[in-house]
Amino acid sequence: LPEVKIDEKKMEKIKLKKTPVDVKDDEVEARIKDIESKFKKFEDTEEWAIIQKWDKVTIDTQWFDKKWWAELPPTKVNAFPLVIGSNTFIPGFEEKLIGEKVWEVVEFEITFPADYHSADFAGKKVFFMTTVFRIERAKDFEWTGEFIEWIRWVKTDLAGFKQILKDEIADEKGYHSRLKDENSLLEELEKIATFEIGPNLIAAEIKRVYDEHSHSLEQQWVKLKDYLEHIKQDEEKYKEEVIKPEAIRRLNAELILNEVKELKKDIDVTNEEISEEIDKIFSKYQNPEAVEKLRTILVPGNQNYEDIKWRLRYRKIIDTFFE
Image (cartoon, rainbow, N blue to C red):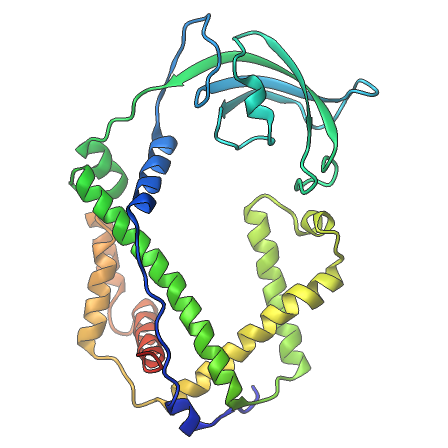
């Protein structure tokens, strides 16, 4: 690793303001609506019912190139459940089904968005033949203590659950605001640090970041090759323009923060602070069995325990630069 030098006098003068964290009521209500949508129950409608927004339909559909009346493989979908208005299918598709009935064959055309993820369909007009063979209507959602306990392992009413959600949102926002503050701090530290990163280290980091990007896309069922085709970029250009700056940013951060930790090695954490942090972790696991398992793991000498200790020390060091 390269040697890093930081101007200590200038470092001690760095004082930044933390990004405030605020949670609004409408953010909590949005989480409530999301949960209701995820766990809502449906019941079959009368056979003469017509499709309305938020109904769940079961469909068969096939896509065609209307010019040649040729099926577009592999686009045939059978027994596909779809909530109208969820925007989970092709843009514009769900709206075409509103007002239709069971067993009707619905025919329509849709022009795919120019930025559609598949280059084969981006900007293309496609003809659809769709059969609806089930319509289910959502039942009114009922918030009960049993349901809340089932999804969060805590006994409370809706008001108490909203407070839990508010605390969760605050934690999420706090995490992102902390990342933002750390980036601001790194920008200041880079101004007073001198070091040079060798090409081998950069190449290794580029490979690591590239593999991370590829894995992240795969978790979304997207291949990196297809993604590069979609954004019209080759692999080498993508590595140079997207991956390399991210790799260098990470290396800079790691090298600078490692040196800062050395310069502030007098800052440490107490056993009491570690215990408090572990108690916070326990509080997020209402399942007694999960808490009991954690108790056997989070003990001095265990890697998980040492990781918590390291993170607390890192946080305390970062906090010295903020008012």
